[in-house]
Length: 205
Image (tube, rainbow, N blue to C red; front, side, top):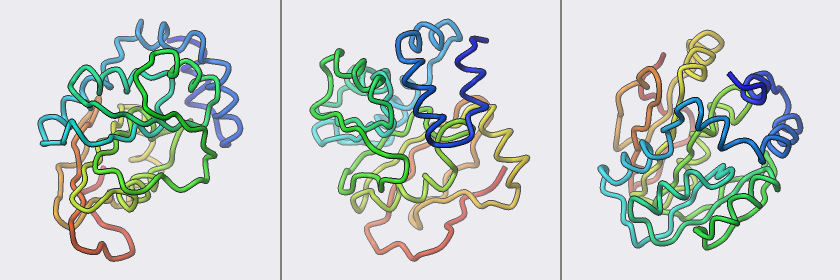
């Protein structure tokens, strides 16, 4: 597979990840498109099937060049906000003209709060966001909101081998199936009641 994708899996620090995606921005869509990347459409379809409100703002967390935003727009979402750690990726997303707002964030910034729908497409895994990002995104959701995230085979293999006892988080109101091979895009709905601190298991690798 392409050299940037190989390098992405080897990136260790947040600064390495940011620099890699800045450098990758110009060829990113061509490279992953050649690899048959279909995750944005799968995640958007999963949110639609789960009953997400198209008229309410959706947060495209780790929006990259805007492939996720395009999939969300094409499925029917009217208002899309994006955040990413790469300024060069955000510039590519802005050129698509699909986002209401695009914001450059730092890796340690807390996710924006109050969204009823959050999509984290291709964001969690080696060379990207850590597994505990799921907890932080769930905590940022509005009560009753939906979070959809993807995990590819490489991410699942890494998580299963490096942290076999790490529980998968979920809201108390929903216990989705453990992630399946290839791409998992099962939305998790946050309960309207207060979520207690600590891990919320939904199965394991």
